[in-house]
Image (cartoon, rainbow, N blue to C red; front, side):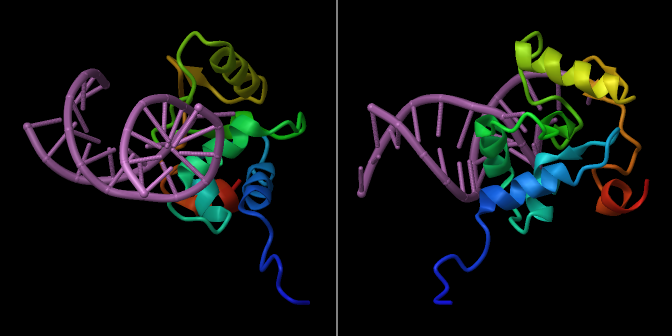
Length: 114
DNA sequence: CCCGTGACTCTAC
DNA sequence: CGTAGAGCCACGG
């Protein structure tokens, strides 16, 4: 194979990383991008989610680095995400997700430990 | 090629 | 815990 595509598209990898988030758990854009092999591409991850059309994609499990929903408060997306998270048992208070202290800091807490 | 915009992140005050 | 500024990448005009 003449290496046309050396690897899957960054978009595909990001989507895979998002799908890999366990139900009832959350991850930051930066963490997702990092897990996708694209460190520093948090914005790319956000762009991919903004353009995603997969209804099966758990996009609502992706938050900002501080555990805040990336949508403007009161917006449709904001409510939708908060609603879906709470439906999975995730506590959302004041637009912020109640994360386990180390969830956004230690990838192991998000991807390894359940 | 330059510029503005965005579901971002970090540091500083 | 709040806001402000700079850095960052990708894209459309």
